[in-house]
Length: 191
Image 1: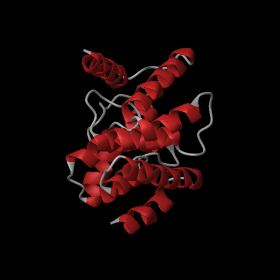
Image 2 (image 1 turned 90 degrees about the vertical axis):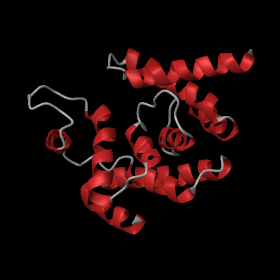
Image 3 (image 1 turned 120 degrees about the vertical axis):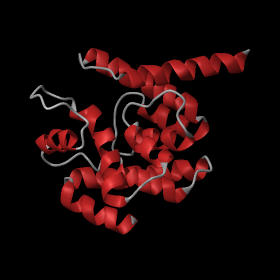
Image 4 (image 1 turned 30 degrees about the horizontal axis):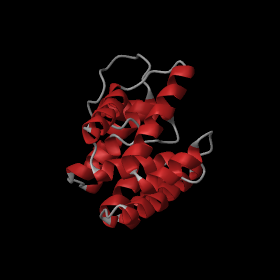
């Protein structure tokens, strides 16, 4: 299945997106080894995480409508938030993926969510810290991902939410829920 996914990705996504995907796979595998996560599930999830980031953005919206993820209106949709759920539909329909953990890791790799599994955290962080990502504070987050996945995830969410606020972009409720959950869990540990 892994080789078939790679061949399909070469056709459906841009070369830059494909190279990004390979870097994410590599980063996620390193995180998986470090945090004792299944490598095959990690590889499949990482390969498929951006499988709906087609070269033409219109195709994302058209396919999302086809899969029933959107209404039939012509309103603009945020393809950044849409590509995760759409990639899940592709994983199911094209590759017969049924593992809920893999599907959730793909779906929430951009936003995160409340009470993420280990695999979900690894895919989120692998995408966030892959070697070509370069912004202030990234190296701290990278290092922390191998020491304490929850702390790195919280820092990544904080950084991303600040960026979205400064950019005047919408913020997924899932991201806010993920952040709040991590803070709540941290408070429970201190008691």
